[in-house]
Length: 297
Image (cartoon, rainbow, N blue to C red; front, side):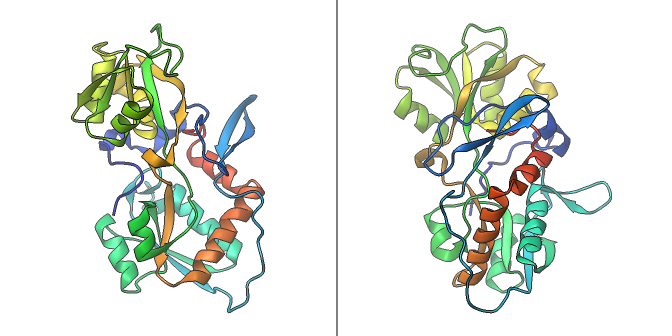
C-alpha cells in the first residue's frame, strides 16, 4: 500500500516548517471539492472541502460506537510524529481525536511501523488506520475507506526573479520543466502541457536543484515536498510557486483516507458523518490551519 505523500528526506519533513509554507489556491478541483475561503491576518486563504455540501446526515439504526482504536505511525510530520514531550502529535492525531469526540466514543491511538499498520487492522489489533493511505481501487477492495481527508496537489516552482509569472499551457510553450522521470507528474505534463520541454530527473531533489541552478525554467511535482524545499536551506530562498495547483484525480488520485476492516460499514458511516459535520461547521478548517497555517492548496 502507498501513502498519499511520497517520502522525502527527513530535513524536508520537520513539523515546524509547515507553518512557513507559502502556498496558493487549488486551481483544478473536482466537483464537490470546492475551496472555502477563510480570513487569516487580513488575507483570504482557501480550505479544500471534500464533502458533498448537499449530503444528508441521517440518524442510523444500530448500536452506538462506544470506542475507536486508531492506529497510526509516528515518524511522518506534520501528519503524525513524536513531540519533544514524547507524545504523539500531528494532523492525523488531532483529526482522530476530533472524530472520536464527535461520535462521543472513547479514543485510543497507537503507533505502528508503516508496513505493519494494515496487517494489524486485519488481525483486529485496531479499528481504523489514520496514516495518509492513498485511496485507490485495491485499497477499496480490501478495506472500508472513508471519504478523503486531504489531497496533495501538484505545483510548478520557479525563480522569484524569473520572467515566468503564469503556468498555463500557452505561457509555458517551449519552456524546460524539471520533473521526476516516470512519475505521475511527468504523465500529467505529457497529457496537458505537450508543448513544454521535459527534463527528467531521478529524484525530486535533483529536479529542484536543477531549477535552482537555472538549468531548467521550472520544476513540477508534489506540492508539499516542493513547499518544504522552498522554505528550507537547500533552496537558498531562490524560488517560489508559479501559478496555481493541480489536483486531477486521474493523475494524482482521490486523496488520503481512513482505513477500516472490510464489512465494518457502521464505523465507516459514522466516521464519514463526523467528517461531514466537522467540515460544515468549520472545525475541520480550524484543525487544518493548526497544522498548515498557510494551506498547501
